[in-house]
Image (cartoon, rainbow, N blue to C red; front, side, top):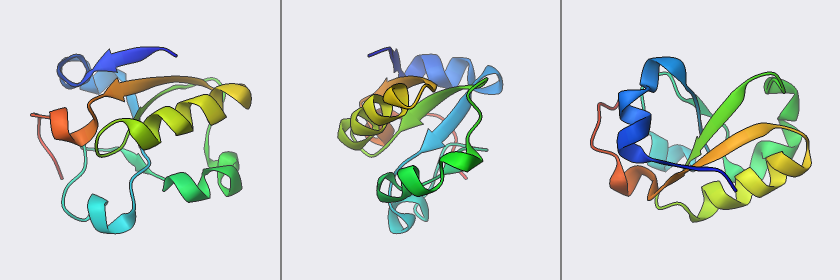
Length: 95
């Protein structure tokens, strides 16, 4: 599984496409700017919203759900990487 640190995501934010797999209530508390929000439990039903030509940086609260999402999406043929530590490690801006 390909991984990236939160600080690296912050430094490359304009170059990355972030996919947030947390629940709506968690996202309401703040998310990485411009992140696409698809809760983990809905990913299999919303694959049509994702583009296999784009690499997604997947984030959750601490890194567990995003790891699950990365494994699932890799098996579906998507290019993905996991942001280690999740939003708990994020020190950048939120919206």
